[in-house]
Image 1 (cartoon, rainbow, N blue to C red):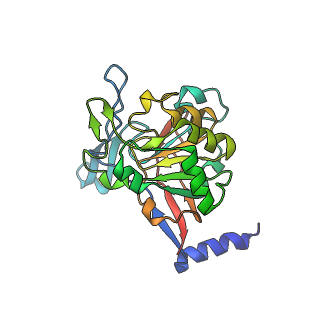
Image 2 (image 1 turned 60 degrees about the vertical axis):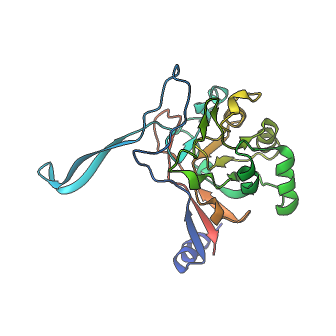
Image 3 (image 1 turned 45 degrees about the vertical axis):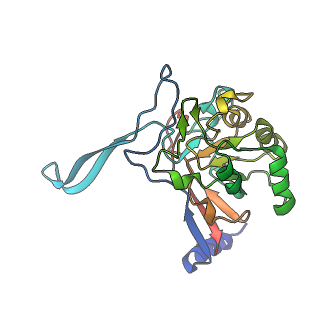
Length: 260
């Protein structure tokens, strides 16, 4: 590849031939958090605290402290996040190869199915039907599950909790095995609070996207938005976690490059 390729990319962005689509939800004190049983450790909610704002605490500058769990808002999951991925090399946020942060996007549009059934699960057959229309999912791609769930982000519908837990879309285990083993994808991205379905604790194995994807040394993106602005194929996703030493993931700024 020549330097001209990179120059053409920048020129295309400047000229509007390539659009940048923000896939990131804003972080705020009401950012939804994954609900887990109270006997387990709990993630901190996002909190921001002003340090100074052009006042006697700091006359010329404005800044804040903030705190939150690693898996808050739009975030990047790395293999060490799950027990199945704990023994991989370079499996934490500070050691993951840079190549993990950029990949072609394959957008699986299941909006109608999820509107009809909030517990909808993508199956292996569903993915193969998508491939029959759009081509084979390439190795190293980000597979993004479009549900339009991100449009519920500021309401109780986003978590959709009931007495038996959350009711949000996700994946059948065979779909994840297909993506990780047969297609060798980079990872899976979703619009929901986490990469698995709300009822994934009753699946076998439990939490299949976490369990199988991280077990295969793959990655996850959660709480994405604006997937409705991406084509089925042809976009490029760029997303990276903070470089936390031995981190299991972090909030990230995710976006896509899309031909205009």
